[in-house]
Amino acid sequence: MRLRTLDVPLSRLPEELAGLRIAHLSDFHLGLPSRGAVAVERAVDWVVERKPDLVAITGDLVSRPRGESSLREQLARLDRPFVVLGNHDVEHSRDPFSRAAGLADLSPARLLADESEMVELRGRRVQIVGVDPRAYRQRRSRPWELVDESADLRILLCHFPYVLSFLPPGAFDLVLSGHMHDGQIALPLGRGRDRRFRFAHPSVRFATGLYERPGGTMHVSPGLGTTFVPFRFFARPEATELVLKRHS
Image 1 (tube, rainbow, N blue to C red):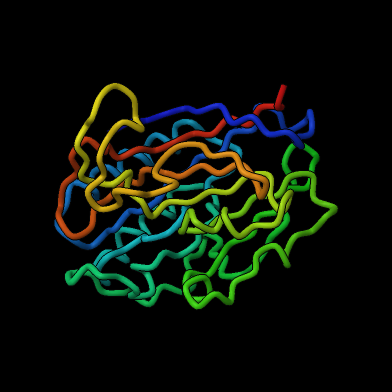
Image 2 (cartoon, rainbow, N blue to C red):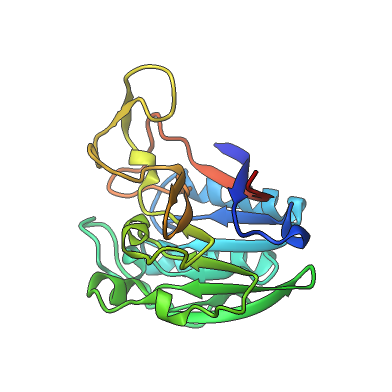
């Protein structure tokens, strides 16, 4: 797996928050036989060692109820991570092997379901908004209505990266998503991460990495686990540390 540090330039970033480090993890899919469980443990080891300013986890935490105990064990090792659910967590999945676990309170993690929380980091107010996957799929979720204009930095957590296409300009500074697994099974077509054929998502707009749009700058995590089949091919699992930079 890949343990990656990535610079993220943001145009509205206060000087005090330059260099802020955010660990972004996604798509654990715990509970099914897969090497993903090993990747999750290694990713959490890395995050604990790095001691970032903030930890965000963007959904698809378990694929079977028996994965809940492993999930809670890993969450307890992290410093109050902010979490949203994904479609597998609420049983909206085409994967015949997946079953929802009915996740609710994930303390000490903070689970956000169409909710917002304000935290203070380096003397600045940082707003974190989380999208409920059920409301998103029913087109009822409007995270921009939760925006607090007084926040110095606004971060949106949503399992589905296509949320970026619906956000009003300037709604959020940073959007964190997952869901895509970087295709999970891909065929390389040349050099570079974008030169590949992703079998699950051959024409996907947001596959992995950074995307800048009027609604915000988004990072799509390749995730750590698997679905449908218990392996990846040319789509390595990844834990990412995002380092916020002032846009030059």
